[in-house]
Amino acid sequence: MRISSDRIALPSLPLPEAPPRLAQLAGLHWGLLASAAALTLVGLLTVRSAAAEMGGGYFARQLVWVAAGLVAMLVAFAIDYQRLLAWSTPLYTGGLVALLLVLPLGHRAGGSVGWFRLGSVGLQPSEFAKLATAILLARYLSAESESYLTPRQLARAVAIALAPMVLTALQPDLGGAAMFVPMVAGVLLVGGVRPRLLVAAALVALVVGGLVWSLGMQSYQRQRVLTFLAPASDPLGAGYQARQSKIAVGSGQLTGRGYRQGTQSQLHFLPARHTDFILAVLAEERGFAGVALVLGLYGAFFVSAATVAARARDRGGVLLVVALVAIAAFHVLYNAAMVIGLVPITGIPLPFLSYGGSFTLVNWIAVGLVLNVDYRRYVNR
Image (cartoon, rainbow, N blue to C red; front, side):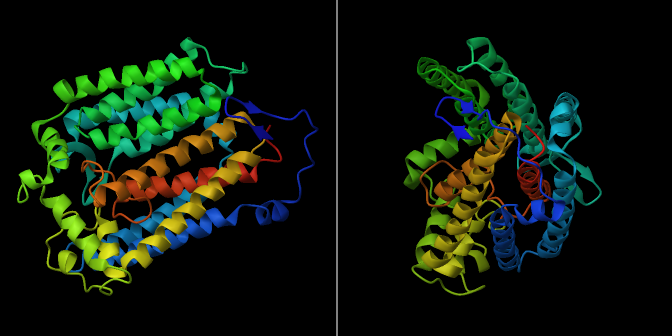
């Protein structure tokens, strides 16, 4: 298969005979699973350190979520992804319904009302809505066969992502809403977009950004952006998190202070240290070497996923992998930039490392779906 910058071109070759199932399993890109497992192990150890003095059993709960995520991965791997593409409309509709219901019925935490509480368990429907949206986008764009998508097709694809994006922003959760942007951008770029439409989209994004700033952002969210531009203006208020994060990262130096020896994390100076700022905890304890290792594992994960997309034998599989990888990659890029003060602080956790039930489940389901596409590349075309 050849993937050009505009479209996906499939060779007109006969479909190779599917090898035995054991051979198919052996032929999977196991580097994807190995890198995800290694990142999860690092995450568990770092959560244990970051939450050691917090109470609440965060480490034990994260272990349970990881176990549940592994089960969910196996389920996502077992169901032929072509069936999931066929079920994309009801899955997407269910995701929208959940996002609508969470607004009046959801549990409020951290200024957002984005969780359903079931006893001590919280589920965040916006995370699962990302998966449903990725599946629907892959199915919709896989049906197109022209060299370039038409403006109408582009508009429909954007509308598919815009509905859950708006509902997530109403919670309000602008960080979660922003995650739909790289997803739709990735599938549209692979699907085929004319350059002039990219320019038009950039202009529209500027206009929408201005409207979001003036009408869609809460005062504390605008303050975060202003503090990012001038961090010294409020070092004990809105700029506190960014300042403590940079102190933690800088104090780690080359090899770090040692496990559970960080001052910013262990002495409670760093907020959200087990979730959004877990990379700062890792940097303080393991230094540049530890962060470089983790970023290398992310690199291996994304290279493995890109290899799966490149050798997939049907357009729907390619687009599904692209959508899932685009979400994860943007999470990593934004979170890493956030902890060193390059972008404004928002609630974007780090895949496989940050504490979080729904986020952990969705990460592992995504791994199962990517392996699903790789496993069935001989039979789906």
